[in-house]
Image (cartoon, rainbow, N blue to C red; front, side, top):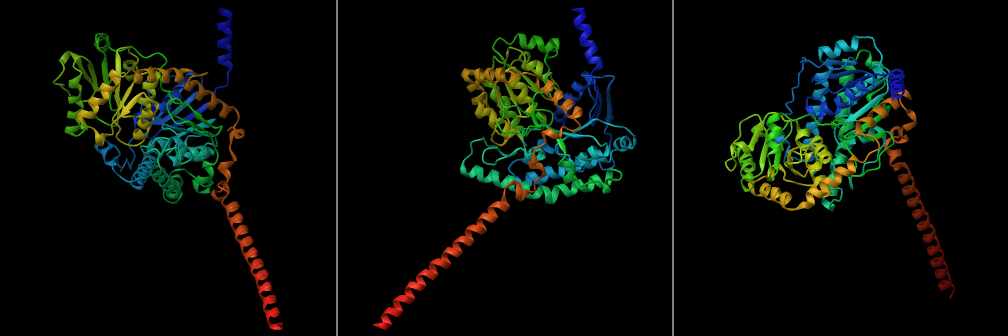
Length: 519
C-alpha cells in the first residue's frame, strides 16, 4: 500500500501543471459559485490558478491567486437587482432581451475599467488557458491578449449565447428560449412566440450587442485596435462548459466541444449543519419544509400580500417544521416558535441532504434545482425571472415538482402544491429516480470539467474538436444559397416549359387556321 501511495504522489507531482486564468465578473453569487468551483478544483488538481471576480473565495490554496474587481469609475449604472427582478415580469421578449444586453454591457464595462483589472493587464505573464463567462463577450479579448486558448463557461442551460460558439444546432421548435416558460413540446402559438424570440436575438445580437462589446474591447485592451474583430476571436473558442445535465434538462444534440458539467459546485460530502439546525431537523418527526429564494430574490423584499400568501399556506401543515432563508424575523401564526427557524444564510446542500427534509420551496434557480436533484428532494418553484420559469417547467415535466409563477402566487395554490407533494408519493419517487440517474456518471461533473480543461491546454486549443459550422457564414450554414439556386432553377424550368407549351399550342392553333382557310 505504501508503494502505491508513493507511486500516486510521484505521478501527481510530475503531472503537467498549467497556468489557468478564470474571469467571472457578474455580481451574482450563483454565477461565481459555478466558475469558482471549477477553479478551486483545478487548483486542487495542482494547476496554477488565477481568478478575477468581485467575490472572494472561501477556501485558500497556495496555487490560487485572486484579482478582486474593485469599484470601477463606471460602476454599474444598471441596477439589475432592483425590486427582486419583479420588473422583468409581464414584458415582451424584446424588452427582456434588450434589458439583458444592457446589463451585460455594463458588467463588462465595470470589469474592464476596474483599476485592478487594468493593472493585471500590464503584467507580462503567460497562461495556458483562459476561462470566461459566456455572455461577457468583451472579455473574450483576454484570449488574444495572452495568446491562449479560450474556454467559455455558462452558468445556465443551453442558449444561443453558448451554442453559436461551437456550432451546436438550436431549434426553436423544441428548445425554449431561456426566458420563455415553455416545455420542449410546445403548442403552435408557443413555437411561434419562441421562434420570434430567437429570430429577434439573431438580428439584434450582431447589430446592437456585439458592436458595443467590440468598442469596449478596443477601449480597454492595449493595442486591441490591431486585433482581429471580436467576431473572429469568438470563432476560436475551444470549449464550452454548460451548467446542465440531461437528467434534469432537455436532451439535445451537442457539438463535441460543448460539455455538460452541471453540478460542479456540489459537495461530495456536505459540511456539518450547525448544532441548532441539526437538532431542529432531527426532531422534525412529521418532516420539514425549507424555503429559500436564492441570493438575488429576497423574501423580505417581496410584496406584503405575496409574503402573507406563503406564510398563510403553512397553516394547513402545523406539524411540519419550517426553515426560511430571510434577513428579517418571520412569525408563522399557525406554528409554534420552536417549529420555525429563520436565518439569513443556511448551508443549503446540508439541509437538502437531511432525511427529514420533505419539500424544497425555491425560486427555480439552476443551482438550487441541481442540488434538489442530487439529494432527491421534491420541489415547489416560485419562479420570478430569467431562466427560472423554464427551469421549473422542466421540473414539472420531469415529475418531481410543481411551479407557481410569482405573479400567480396566492395562499391557496401554494397550499395545494404542498398538499400534492405531501400526499402523492409520485413526486418523491420521481425525485429519487432522477437523483439516481444523475449520480450514475463515470466521472463527477467537476472531474469531467477538469479533464476537458486539461485536454484543451494539452492540445493547444484542441482544434480537432472544432465544428466547421462556426466558420460558415449564415447563408451557407443554412444552405440559403442552395435553396435560392434551386428556386431560381425551378422557376427557370417552369418558364421554359411554359414557353415550350405555349409554342406547341400556338403551332397547332396555326395549322388549324391554315386548314380552315384552304377549305
